[in-house]
Amino acid sequence: MITKRIIPCLDMTEGKVVKGIKFEAFRDAGDPVELAEIYDKQGADELVFLDITATVDNRPILLDVVKRTAVKVTIPFSVGGGVRSVDDMRQILINGADKVSVNTGSVRNPELIKKCANTFGSQCVVLSLDAKKVRPKIWNVFIDGGRTDAGLNAIEWAKEAVRIGCGEILLTSIDQDGTKTGFDVELTKIISEAVSVPVIASGGGGKLSDFYDIFSKGKADAALAASLFHFNELTVLQIKDYLEKKGIEVRNET
Amino acid sequence: MIAVVDYGIGNIGSVANTINKLGFKFRITGDPEIIGKSKIIILPGVGSAAAGMANLKKLNLAETITDQLRNRKPFLGICLGMQLLFDYSEEGKVECLGFIKGKVLKFKKMKKVPHIGWNRVSFKSNGFKYSQGFKANSYFYFVNSYYCEPADKSIVAGTTDYGESFASVIIRNNLLATQFHPEKSGITGLYLLNNFFKHYL
Image (cartoon, rainbow over the protein chains, first blue to last red):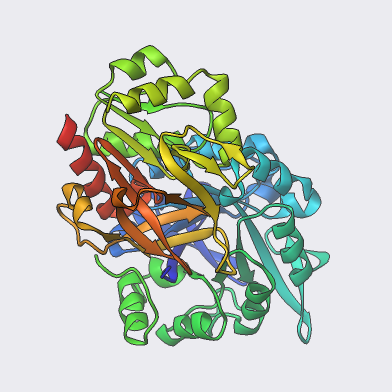
């Protein structure tokens, strides 16, 4: 059967990988292409690049990083940040990415998802959804790198995005981001069970058991982490060895 | 020379990058003459079957490709490039190239479609031709909502399970077709491609 995926995430700004806590207090974590190659060799299933300041700086994504990564890595990777049009998406795909994630641009203009899916196929349109709890069991969508409450219910937006053509959801819990106290199991389970596309859980992974919980209880299809990997606190291989022992099927043959 | 067929669909860049890594000469082309002169043809592709067929016809490539296949030119079909070889696809209810008897059907037993991620391919003995260097039940990277169901089961060289067992590899004469993306399947994918290219170059 299909395996659960472990995905290192490279949050970039100005060509450098950075990592923050709850979308703030960023510190430098190195060169994106070098890190991408290391994770590929460690057995990462996929890579995610997010240009986290492209939207607020109102500038195009770093296509040069995309291009240099594409010639080096042997696994799929997605790229997101500041995608506002079909043409933005085309540029990213032409430079070698396999998928493109849309976030703020698609909340402001849902047609973007539909147009991109019709042009390139749903399989390469990933909805990046940043959610924050506003009341018990209620999460809202936040945009502009977590700065603005879009006033949308996260579950409803996830369902709508799938209906209009996104092929996967990258679900980040702003509450858990960078805390290393565990993924948001409750939120992930609700969204994963509400939609018919794979859900990548993001935000809060800190210890091995967090990864087991997000797959077994949270019903995630993939789990994403960043600083854990950048600062060598855990490796992809350690997580996979652990999950395999716990009876979760992963690709573990490197 | 390997001809990577450019028919305006899918991510040809990643196929090109991978051939580059392996060090083989290739051309990305939609020119029937260059395709005819090549030693190996690759039909890549992501996206919908209807759009794929429409583009092949619009660019006058449908006939070139079937002619080359009939002449047993070494041929690699990847993902949509595999599905288009069949008679018919449920995706957009479209007639395809009809080089392989059978249909392309939608996954019906699993809640999550597309089937995205790494899944096992169990190679059968007829698939061992290109499987040197990796285990016969290795993982490959898939992104598909539809799968191929050939009428002649003897051409199935590998199977994968996603709620139902489906043909993830087909081998017939000099044709290799994979539902997964070998160009995105890490070292294992590189082995498979290298084995196939070396067999004919």
